[in-house]
Length: 428
Image (tube, rainbow, N blue to C red; front, side, top):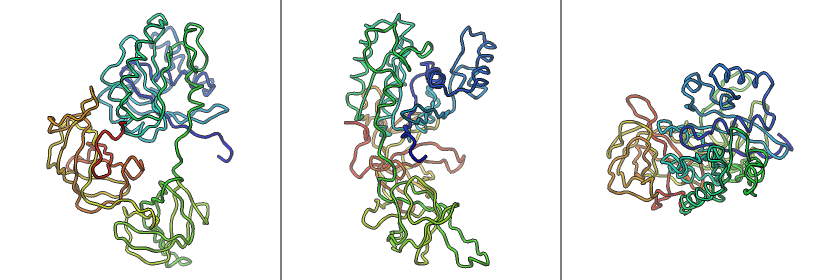
């Protein structure tokens, strides 16, 4: 909206039962984002489950299986706002089985909010989620030491965990890392300072979220327009209309701009920019538009339009990081479908170079295959060239998924690397 506060996208992560959904429910409640009937419904559901308190986690755990088991399974998106900022929050699951959902939720986030149970400290999922946030180039990290009420709000417990967390994130390249002690169930240090922890003098969680600088907007990047659909209405008033519809995932375009069509390498000019609301003289990302071009070229779904002076890479041999999401391990020479933007091609796993050891964040070349939830560096060879950017430069054109040709299941999420780059793309 014109003149509205800026938007911060954030994703929660952490291990099972660390209190992610409770924290989100507390934020929604204390920022007055709930209608009276919503709160009453949660109150009734809490009593039905035998709880002697209002279980705010039920605000985000909407699936029946989630409420029955008391865990998060799907990614739940929630909007909330304060006078200073708007927020889009993704509540992602903590269970190792649903790591793929955490990858989905964090892939567009400006900030990752990772919870740590004050009683348990750092566990394997903590390490995995922190590393994935760094790998996905999430610039800001907030580590919330939750359930401080269950350790007597002890400063010594927090000090020990803060030192351990500092050592954990030291090799990872976040723009900022903040550690906050909270008790989400009671609201301590969530939106107001807790009188039970007078030794903590830092900001509350909400204060910090309001101050974090937002990420660079998509409109500031180079023009990237993947073609999704060719529009040929052939109506009486527009017998020769030919438009190319798709999302402006980054950059901006104006009528009259010269554009390069990849992978063909042809150039033309933008004759018109059409939208449902009418023609535009210019458009900037993120926005869905239809471009009409000055020349009749052979352009199909999956082709990419860019400015000639800032083209992406084009190639068939791709270095990438994979997060393997299938129970069946990845094997060298495996064949899959690779979906990148609007383009789907066949791909061969040319080599598996190494797996990342989650305990040390270092390559483990002794692991020749990738199993469920493993992260590793591979080289893929596609049957047709792809126009792409390294993920470190563009999230939109630097990511892909692998699909099993037989089952049509998504088996991996991937991040493209610049040639010669290492898999620890999120490390310092």
